[in-house]
Length: 353
Image 1 (cartoon, rainbow, N blue to C red):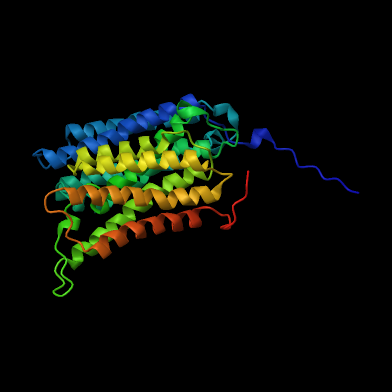
Image 2: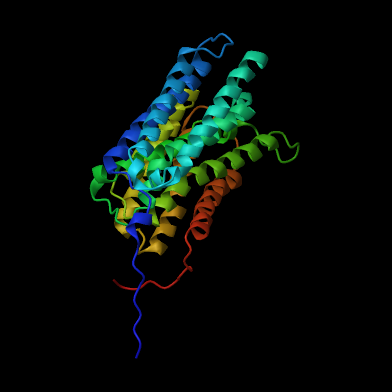
Protein backbone atom coordinates (compact mmCIF):
# COMPACT_ATOMS: atom_id res chain seq x y z
CA UNK A 1 0.00 0.00 0.00
CA UNK A 2 1.51 3.27 -1.07
CA UNK A 3 0.66 6.80 -0.13
CA UNK A 4 1.17 9.97 -2.05
CA UNK A 5 1.46 13.50 -0.81
CA UNK A 6 0.72 16.65 -2.72
CA UNK A 7 3.71 18.90 -3.26
CA UNK A 8 3.68 21.95 -1.07
CA UNK A 9 2.83 25.22 -2.71
CA UNK A 10 5.66 27.71 -2.41
CA UNK A 11 3.73 30.80 -1.36
CA UNK A 12 6.70 33.01 -2.17
CA UNK A 13 6.35 32.06 -5.84
CA UNK A 14 2.72 33.19 -6.03
CA UNK A 15 1.99 36.68 -7.38
CA UNK A 16 0.82 39.31 -4.89
CA UNK A 17 -2.93 39.60 -4.45
CA UNK A 18 -4.97 42.76 -4.26
CA UNK A 19 -7.52 43.31 -1.53
CA UNK A 20 -11.19 43.91 -2.23
CA UNK A 21 -10.70 47.55 -1.23
CA UNK A 22 -7.83 47.98 -3.70
CA UNK A 23 -9.91 46.38 -6.46
CA UNK A 24 -12.76 48.73 -5.58
CA UNK A 25 -10.48 51.73 -6.15
CA UNK A 26 -9.50 50.23 -9.52
CA UNK A 27 -13.18 49.91 -10.39
CA UNK A 28 -13.92 53.51 -9.39
CA UNK A 29 -11.11 55.04 -11.44
CA UNK A 30 -12.08 52.73 -14.33
CA UNK A 31 -15.63 54.06 -13.99
CA UNK A 32 -14.21 57.57 -14.42
CA UNK A 33 -12.54 56.41 -17.63
CA UNK A 34 -15.61 54.68 -19.08
CA UNK A 35 -17.94 57.50 -17.98
CA UNK A 36 -15.76 59.87 -19.99
CA UNK A 37 -16.23 57.65 -23.04
CA UNK A 38 -20.02 57.64 -22.74
CA UNK A 39 -20.12 61.39 -22.06
CA UNK A 40 -18.08 61.91 -25.23
CA UNK A 41 -20.56 59.74 -27.15
CA UNK A 42 -23.45 61.80 -25.74
CA UNK A 43 -21.76 65.01 -26.86
CA UNK A 44 -21.30 63.68 -30.39
CA UNK A 45 -24.92 62.46 -30.53
CA UNK A 46 -26.59 65.56 -29.08
CA UNK A 47 -24.30 68.58 -29.42
CA UNK A 48 -22.69 70.46 -32.28
CA UNK A 49 -18.95 70.03 -31.83
CA UNK A 50 -15.93 71.58 -33.46
CA UNK A 51 -13.64 69.13 -35.20
CA UNK A 52 -10.86 69.18 -32.64
CA UNK A 53 -9.19 66.62 -30.43
CA UNK A 54 -9.07 68.96 -27.42
CA UNK A 55 -12.60 68.90 -26.00
CA UNK A 56 -13.93 68.80 -22.41
CA UNK A 57 -15.29 65.33 -23.14
CA UNK A 58 -11.88 64.04 -24.15
CA UNK A 59 -10.57 65.73 -21.00
CA UNK A 60 -12.85 63.59 -18.81
CA UNK A 61 -11.90 60.47 -20.75
CA UNK A 62 -8.14 60.93 -20.70
CA UNK A 63 -7.98 62.25 -17.13
CA UNK A 64 -9.83 59.07 -16.13
CA UNK A 65 -7.13 57.09 -17.89
CA UNK A 66 -4.36 58.99 -16.10
CA UNK A 67 -6.01 58.33 -12.72
CA UNK A 68 -6.40 54.64 -13.58
CA UNK A 69 -2.82 54.36 -14.80
CA UNK A 70 -1.40 56.05 -11.72
CA UNK A 71 -3.35 53.77 -9.41
CA UNK A 72 -2.41 50.55 -11.22
CA UNK A 73 1.27 51.52 -11.29
CA UNK A 74 1.05 52.21 -7.55
CA UNK A 75 -0.38 48.73 -6.99
CA UNK A 76 2.78 47.36 -8.58
CA UNK A 77 5.19 49.64 -6.71
CA UNK A 78 3.82 48.74 -3.26
CA UNK A 79 4.92 45.15 -3.94
CA UNK A 80 8.58 46.05 -4.49
CA UNK A 81 9.67 43.52 -1.88
CA UNK A 82 7.58 40.69 -3.33
CA UNK A 83 10.27 39.44 -5.69
CA UNK A 84 13.51 40.07 -7.44
CA UNK A 85 12.03 41.13 -10.80
CA UNK A 86 9.45 43.69 -11.84
CA UNK A 87 7.14 40.92 -13.09
CA UNK A 88 6.91 39.45 -9.59
CA UNK A 89 5.57 42.77 -8.28
CA UNK A 90 2.47 42.62 -10.48
CA UNK A 91 -0.70 41.61 -8.59
CA UNK A 92 -2.61 38.57 -9.82
CA UNK A 93 -5.02 39.51 -12.59
CA UNK A 94 -3.35 42.87 -13.31
CA UNK A 95 -0.66 41.78 -15.77
CA UNK A 96 -2.87 42.24 -18.82
CA UNK A 97 -4.14 45.48 -17.32
CA UNK A 98 -0.61 46.90 -17.37
CA UNK A 99 -0.28 45.78 -20.99
CA UNK A 100 -3.55 47.62 -21.57
CA UNK A 101 -2.03 50.83 -20.20
CA UNK A 102 0.73 50.70 -22.80
CA UNK A 103 -1.72 49.86 -25.59
CA UNK A 104 -3.98 52.72 -24.50
CA UNK A 105 -1.10 55.23 -24.58
CA UNK A 106 -0.22 54.06 -28.09
CA UNK A 107 -3.84 54.46 -29.19
CA UNK A 108 -4.17 57.88 -27.53
CA UNK A 109 -1.10 59.29 -29.25
CA UNK A 110 -2.24 57.83 -32.56
CA UNK A 111 -5.75 59.19 -32.06
CA UNK A 112 -4.45 62.72 -31.46
CA UNK A 113 -2.42 62.57 -34.68
CA UNK A 114 -5.32 61.00 -36.61
CA UNK A 115 -7.77 63.73 -35.54
CA UNK A 116 -5.28 66.51 -36.25
CA UNK A 117 -4.67 65.26 -39.79
CA UNK A 118 -8.01 63.73 -40.79
CA UNK A 119 -10.50 65.44 -38.48
CA UNK A 120 -13.07 63.95 -36.10
CA UNK A 121 -15.04 60.90 -37.25
CA UNK A 122 -18.80 60.66 -36.96
CA UNK A 123 -21.16 57.71 -36.58
CA UNK A 124 -19.90 54.21 -37.28
CA UNK A 125 -16.66 55.69 -38.69
CA UNK A 126 -15.65 56.62 -35.14
CA UNK A 127 -16.24 53.09 -33.85
CA UNK A 128 -14.20 51.46 -36.61
CA UNK A 129 -11.35 53.98 -36.64
CA UNK A 130 -8.09 52.00 -36.16
CA UNK A 131 -6.84 54.27 -33.37
CA UNK A 132 -10.16 53.99 -31.56
CA UNK A 133 -9.98 50.20 -31.80
CA UNK A 134 -6.50 50.34 -30.24
CA UNK A 135 -7.94 52.47 -27.42
CA UNK A 136 -10.79 49.97 -27.04
CA UNK A 137 -8.38 47.04 -26.78
CA UNK A 138 -6.30 48.80 -24.13
CA UNK A 139 -9.36 49.93 -22.19
CA UNK A 140 -10.81 46.42 -22.21
CA UNK A 141 -7.65 45.00 -20.64
CA UNK A 142 -7.63 47.77 -18.02
CA UNK A 143 -11.22 47.71 -16.76
CA UNK A 144 -11.37 43.91 -16.61
CA UNK A 145 -8.41 43.66 -14.20
CA UNK A 146 -10.49 43.41 -10.98
CA UNK A 147 -12.72 40.63 -12.30
CA UNK A 148 -9.62 38.72 -13.44
CA UNK A 149 -8.12 39.19 -9.96
CA UNK A 150 -11.23 37.70 -8.33
CA UNK A 151 -11.39 34.83 -10.83
CA UNK A 152 -7.81 33.91 -9.93
CA UNK A 153 -8.58 33.96 -6.21
CA UNK A 154 -9.85 30.50 -5.20
CA UNK A 155 -10.52 31.79 -1.69
CA UNK A 156 -13.02 34.39 -2.92
CA UNK A 157 -16.55 33.28 -2.05
CA UNK A 158 -18.89 36.27 -2.27
CA UNK A 159 -21.67 36.64 0.26
CA UNK A 160 -24.45 39.09 -0.45
CA UNK A 161 -24.71 41.84 -3.04
CA UNK A 162 -22.16 44.15 -1.43
CA UNK A 163 -19.64 41.32 -1.12
CA UNK A 164 -19.96 40.71 -4.84
CA UNK A 165 -19.94 44.37 -5.84
CA UNK A 166 -16.31 44.60 -7.01
CA UNK A 167 -16.37 41.80 -9.62
CA UNK A 168 -19.89 42.83 -10.64
CA UNK A 169 -18.87 46.45 -11.30
CA UNK A 170 -15.71 45.39 -13.11
CA UNK A 171 -17.58 42.99 -15.38
CA UNK A 172 -20.38 45.51 -15.96
CA UNK A 173 -17.84 48.11 -17.13
CA UNK A 174 -16.21 45.49 -19.37
CA UNK A 175 -19.50 44.48 -20.99
CA UNK A 176 -20.54 48.13 -21.32
CA UNK A 177 -17.31 48.87 -23.19
CA UNK A 178 -17.86 45.93 -25.54
CA UNK A 179 -21.46 47.03 -26.12
CA UNK A 180 -20.27 50.59 -26.81
CA UNK A 181 -18.10 49.49 -29.70
CA UNK A 182 -20.84 47.25 -31.08
CA UNK A 183 -23.56 49.86 -30.68
CA UNK A 184 -24.28 49.79 -34.43
CA UNK A 185 -25.42 46.18 -33.88
CA UNK A 186 -27.05 46.81 -30.49
CA UNK A 187 -30.62 46.09 -31.49
CA UNK A 188 -32.13 47.07 -28.13
CA UNK A 189 -33.60 50.54 -28.50
CA UNK A 190 -33.10 50.67 -32.25
CA UNK A 191 -36.76 50.13 -33.00
CA UNK A 192 -36.36 51.26 -36.60
CA UNK A 193 -35.10 47.90 -37.84
CA UNK A 194 -38.31 45.89 -37.36
CA UNK A 195 -40.36 48.66 -38.97
CA UNK A 196 -38.87 48.36 -42.44
CA UNK A 197 -41.31 46.72 -44.80
CA UNK A 198 -40.39 43.19 -45.78
CA UNK A 199 -41.89 42.05 -49.07
CA UNK A 200 -40.96 38.43 -49.92
CA UNK A 201 -41.91 39.04 -53.56
CA UNK A 202 -40.02 42.26 -54.30
CA UNK A 203 -37.34 41.77 -51.66
CA UNK A 204 -37.87 45.26 -50.23
CA UNK A 205 -36.40 45.49 -46.76
CA UNK A 206 -34.46 42.23 -46.87
CA UNK A 207 -31.19 43.95 -45.98
CA UNK A 208 -32.80 45.52 -42.91
CA UNK A 209 -34.17 42.20 -41.72
CA UNK A 210 -30.75 40.62 -42.06
CA UNK A 211 -29.14 43.47 -40.18
CA UNK A 212 -31.80 43.29 -37.49
CA UNK A 213 -31.39 39.56 -36.92
CA UNK A 214 -27.61 39.96 -36.89
CA UNK A 215 -27.95 42.71 -34.29
CA UNK A 216 -30.20 40.52 -32.14
CA UNK A 217 -27.63 37.72 -32.18
CA UNK A 218 -24.69 40.00 -31.35
CA UNK A 219 -26.58 41.75 -28.54
CA UNK A 220 -27.65 38.38 -27.12
CA UNK A 221 -24.10 37.04 -27.05
CA UNK A 222 -22.75 40.20 -25.42
CA UNK A 223 -25.32 39.98 -22.62
CA UNK A 224 -25.36 36.20 -22.08
CA UNK A 225 -21.57 35.74 -22.01
CA UNK A 226 -21.08 37.50 -18.62
CA UNK A 227 -24.06 35.59 -17.24
CA UNK A 228 -22.51 32.21 -18.03
CA UNK A 229 -19.04 33.40 -16.95
CA UNK A 230 -20.27 34.33 -13.47
CA UNK A 231 -22.60 31.37 -12.94
CA UNK A 232 -20.06 28.73 -13.86
CA UNK A 233 -17.78 30.08 -11.12
CA UNK A 234 -19.95 31.49 -8.30
CA UNK A 235 -23.41 31.46 -6.79
CA UNK A 236 -24.26 35.08 -7.50
CA UNK A 237 -26.49 37.22 -5.25
CA UNK A 238 -29.99 38.22 -6.25
CA UNK A 239 -29.99 41.48 -8.20
CA UNK A 240 -26.73 40.84 -10.06
CA UNK A 241 -28.16 40.83 -13.57
CA UNK A 242 -30.91 43.35 -12.88
CA UNK A 243 -28.13 45.78 -12.00
CA UNK A 244 -25.86 44.83 -14.91
CA UNK A 245 -28.45 44.82 -17.70
CA UNK A 246 -30.19 47.97 -16.46
CA UNK A 247 -26.96 49.94 -16.06
CA UNK A 248 -25.67 49.01 -19.51
CA UNK A 249 -28.90 49.84 -21.30
CA UNK A 250 -29.39 53.14 -19.43
CA UNK A 251 -25.87 54.17 -20.49
CA UNK A 252 -26.54 53.21 -24.12
CA UNK A 253 -29.94 54.91 -24.30
CA UNK A 254 -28.69 58.29 -23.11
CA UNK A 255 -25.28 58.20 -24.79
CA UNK A 256 -26.60 57.21 -28.20
CA UNK A 257 -30.14 58.60 -28.03
CA UNK A 258 -31.80 55.19 -28.35
CA UNK A 259 -35.42 54.38 -27.61
CA UNK A 260 -36.14 53.83 -23.92
CA UNK A 261 -37.64 50.43 -24.66
CA UNK A 262 -34.05 49.22 -24.25
CA UNK A 263 -34.21 50.05 -20.55
CA UNK A 264 -37.48 48.17 -20.11
CA UNK A 265 -36.07 45.15 -21.95
CA UNK A 266 -32.93 45.20 -19.81
CA UNK A 267 -34.89 45.41 -16.56
CA UNK A 268 -37.21 42.53 -17.48
CA UNK A 269 -34.34 40.34 -18.68
CA UNK A 270 -32.29 41.14 -15.58
CA UNK A 271 -35.11 40.47 -13.12
CA UNK A 272 -36.02 37.31 -15.03
CA UNK A 273 -32.43 36.09 -14.85
CA UNK A 274 -32.20 36.78 -11.11
CA UNK A 275 -35.52 35.04 -10.39
CA UNK A 276 -34.58 32.01 -12.49
CA UNK A 277 -31.16 31.75 -10.86
CA UNK A 278 -32.76 31.84 -7.43
CA UNK A 279 -35.54 29.38 -8.31
CA UNK A 280 -33.27 26.88 -10.07
CA UNK A 281 -30.29 27.44 -7.73
CA UNK A 282 -28.15 27.94 -10.84
CA UNK A 283 -24.43 27.92 -10.18
CA UNK A 284 -21.28 25.80 -10.39
CA UNK A 285 -23.00 22.81 -8.75
CA UNK A 286 -26.04 22.96 -11.06
CA UNK A 287 -24.74 23.48 -14.58
CA UNK A 288 -27.93 22.27 -16.24
CA UNK A 289 -29.75 25.09 -14.47
CA UNK A 290 -27.18 27.59 -15.80
CA UNK A 291 -27.92 26.40 -19.33
CA UNK A 292 -31.66 26.79 -18.78
CA UNK A 293 -31.10 30.39 -17.64
CA UNK A 294 -28.89 31.08 -20.69
CA UNK A 295 -31.72 29.86 -22.92
CA UNK A 296 -34.64 31.60 -21.21
CA UNK A 297 -33.13 35.06 -20.61
CA UNK A 298 -32.82 35.94 -24.34
CA UNK A 299 -36.42 34.80 -24.84
CA UNK A 300 -37.55 37.24 -22.16
CA UNK A 301 -35.37 40.05 -23.48
CA UNK A 302 -36.52 39.94 -27.07
CA UNK A 303 -40.16 39.10 -26.30
CA UNK A 304 -40.36 42.33 -24.31
CA UNK A 305 -38.52 44.24 -27.02
CA UNK A 306 -40.81 43.13 -29.86
CA UNK A 307 -43.87 43.52 -27.64
CA UNK A 308 -43.00 47.16 -26.94
CA UNK A 309 -42.26 47.83 -30.60
CA UNK A 310 -45.61 46.28 -31.56
CA UNK A 311 -47.40 48.54 -29.06
CA UNK A 312 -46.04 51.69 -30.71
CA UNK A 313 -47.56 53.38 -33.78
CA UNK A 314 -46.63 51.44 -36.89
CA UNK A 315 -46.05 48.21 -35.01
CA UNK A 316 -43.78 45.52 -36.44
CA UNK A 317 -43.52 45.20 -40.20
CA UNK A 318 -41.64 41.92 -40.04
CA UNK A 319 -43.69 38.78 -40.71
CA UNK A 320 -44.64 36.68 -37.68
CA UNK A 321 -42.29 33.88 -38.75
CA UNK A 322 -39.27 36.19 -38.75
CA UNK A 323 -39.71 38.10 -35.49
CA UNK A 324 -40.92 35.06 -33.52
CA UNK A 325 -38.13 32.97 -35.04
CA UNK A 326 -35.59 35.64 -34.11
CA UNK A 327 -36.71 35.42 -30.46
CA UNK A 328 -36.36 31.63 -30.39
CA UNK A 329 -33.07 31.79 -32.28
CA UNK A 330 -31.71 34.16 -29.62
CA UNK A 331 -32.60 31.60 -26.95
CA UNK A 332 -30.81 28.88 -28.90
CA UNK A 333 -27.77 31.16 -29.23
CA UNK A 334 -27.66 31.63 -25.46
CA UNK A 335 -27.95 27.89 -24.87
CA UNK A 336 -25.24 27.12 -27.44
CA UNK A 337 -22.96 29.66 -25.76
CA UNK A 338 -23.40 27.88 -22.44
CA UNK A 339 -22.38 24.60 -24.06
CA UNK A 340 -19.21 26.19 -25.43
CA UNK A 341 -18.23 28.08 -22.27
CA UNK A 342 -18.87 25.31 -19.73
CA UNK A 343 -16.56 22.34 -20.06
CA UNK A 344 -18.97 19.77 -18.71
CA UNK A 345 -21.05 17.22 -20.67
CA UNK A 346 -24.74 17.95 -21.02
CA UNK A 347 -26.68 15.60 -18.74
CA UNK A 348 -30.30 15.02 -19.50
CA UNK A 349 -31.14 13.33 -16.22
CA UNK A 350 -32.06 15.35 -13.17
CA UNK A 351 -31.10 14.01 -9.79
CA UNK A 352 -32.79 14.79 -6.52
CA UNK A 353 -30.70 16.83 -4.14
